[in-house]
Image (cartoon, rainbow, N blue to C red; front, side):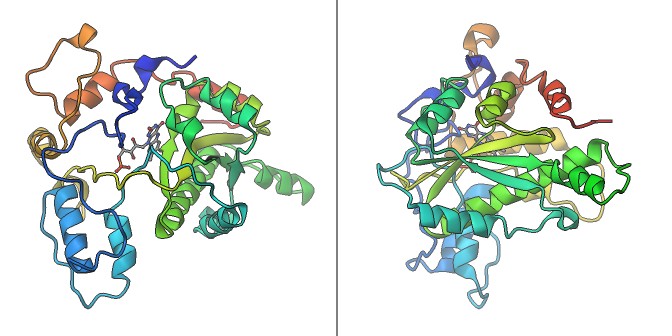
Length: 316
Ligand SMILES: Cc1cc2nc3c(=O)[nH]c(=O)nc-3n(C[C@H](O)[C@H](O)[C@H](O)COP(=O)(O)O)c2cc1C
């Protein structure tokens, strides 16, 4: 059902360990473990961040919590999992840790759906035929922004609810995203691998029906969880000079910065193939910005706003 042109074509290659579609240039993938002892943890952090951002950062060996930083710096999504279950008690522990995340105004507007029933998962997967890792993952979760409880309490406490506008949706969506991120960090801390799945929003009504989503709730993303089959690889990011802003945004050569990133990334993780060659032809140099421009040249989730409104959120 899913329009494969709207999702990353490179994702459909089951031989790929990683999403990003890109292949390592010659060298072995970096070690993924949180506790790199040789080289030291601070060196492992430095190396991961150098690979990620193309910049040598100072990482003092005296800092506390270096293992936690190493896990965060070494992040990578996983799409291949061992056939080893994730015990329900462990999953519940991770959900509890995730839901310990900060919450806007203490409103607690995020839920986690554990999709245990194969038929429900299949219904969702059928909307996304090009991502086999969703069905293969030992655990599949859906993170939900839940804006239903707040107006319910207002009614119950006989109070007006004059804040039914875009911010109500935004707050629930942000809470859901923070809880998912916290789940990823908790899962990574114990050696699990994860991959978020926003493709569940390609056909949100089918997902809403499968999960019996109540009014004023929206699926933020799915999450595949399991024991990784491979260490995975670091995906380079835009340089810190592009995305860390001192005080205020000023004049800058953004095109030049992005093209420098295209080249740095292509040297480390070149794309294995080009997107929609039949439409755009074969580029002599195919970098991140070319890939993203091609990806977003196709309409994607154009009726998501309509779905969110149908769910009872007002977006004005
Ligand atoms: C909100 C969100 C949605 C995502 N949706 C998908 C998805 O539908 N399918 C997929 O294979 N990966 C998905 N990803 C994973 C991204 O492709 C991945 O994070 C990105 O390529 C960077 O790679 P890394 O996580 O290994 O650093 C998603 C990530 C996020 C944060």
